[in-house]
Amino acid sequence: MKHIHYEDWYWYKDHAWRVNARKSGLYTHILRPVIGQLNDMLVRHSKVFVYRFDIRVAGYTEDNKIISDLIRRLKKRIRTHYMIGDISYCWVREQERSKHQHYHLVFLLDGQKVRHPHQLNKWIAAYSEFFDLKPHWAGYHNVRRDQAGYEVKAQEACHHISYLAKSRGKGYRPKYTHDFGVSRYI
Image 1: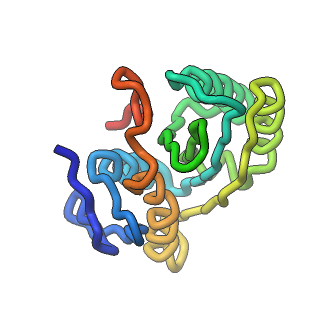
Image 2: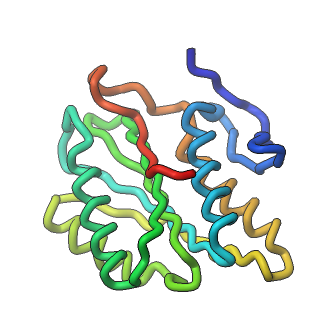
């Protein structure tokens, strides 16, 4: 059974994380891996670049192939351009009033190599034209462990990306299609 969390704080690995549970609440089966991705990257890197964006598709699809293709192509570009092997990401599929789905995505990258989303925006825009998608840039965070206010920055990033776990809009898909996906993390 899916559990919905309605509180402003969520405990993950003995740490309270600030989350955006307003209105519809957050699915914990999605929230845990989203926070897990952030937590893992913050442990592995002294600086983490957190980038959230949304994608609207031109028409309804029964699968998530379009988002899988976009992520695969972005990962290839990121690895080649920034020389990064460690790429974390999360995505969710939603459909509310529209006849077709949209996606929310988060990429978490080594902040020593990526500091601004300018190049990522260019690649996403180019792929969006090719795939007939409409991107929306939802913001980014640079979280540095050695900087004053590190905890505040980490909490702001968590609050921002926890939006992916909101319960509203999920489940409108064929049974064999997933509502969300995350990269593998330790």
